[in-house]
Image 1: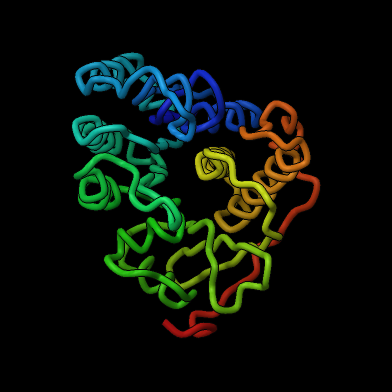
Image 2: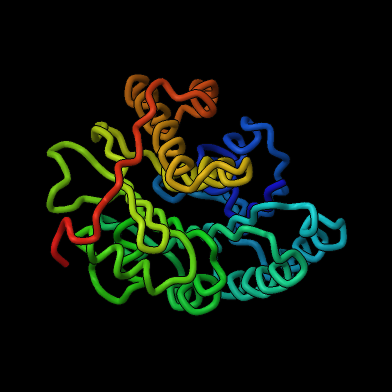
Length: 284
């Protein structure tokens, strides 16, 4: 079982609305806890609904505990939190959950922003994520911009990424990487586990729908839940995400075509392999 604490939308695929189906497609039961209930993501002219009250989120999480789901879960995922108050409630839950189930793998997607959009979360959330969630994470899944914010400086090379990851306690998968030696018209995900690192390189597609990172994190969580080795789980998640984006681009869709790509969530057309990365391949 996976416990997934993220946003939820009526239309489109972000947060749990992007991550839930991929996890279920892998045959995994998911306890999905919303931090928001919105009509759609904010890249539309209008958006209805709201960030949920922290009291409600905390109450739902208490219900998760009362049903014994913490003890039966193998993976816990957190994503978009919506407010500092929700972040505090979720952080408290993470601490309790890790204490109740020491074998629980906590996957933290530190949703903060992106290179072209900047920081798009509530004031105070980046600091809360850095100080209260990241220290407990077994796996981090930031994009390159977010990882730089958490590290306190831009991270433009593989060596800089590895040095920043070495300061955290767990494994890290950095998405959307553009490094000095990244091939033209390609994008990379860098997976780091202690002194070992791998890169997964894919062509850059002419589409950028919202929720891609949430999809990747859901697929990675599914792989980890099934016991797949970290670099292989990252590679499989990247490969299925690529297929979804390829189908989305061909359809000309504004939203990810998750249902249309359902079979690719478990069996990608092509597996982009993880390639071992030496720590000195690029200068910081």
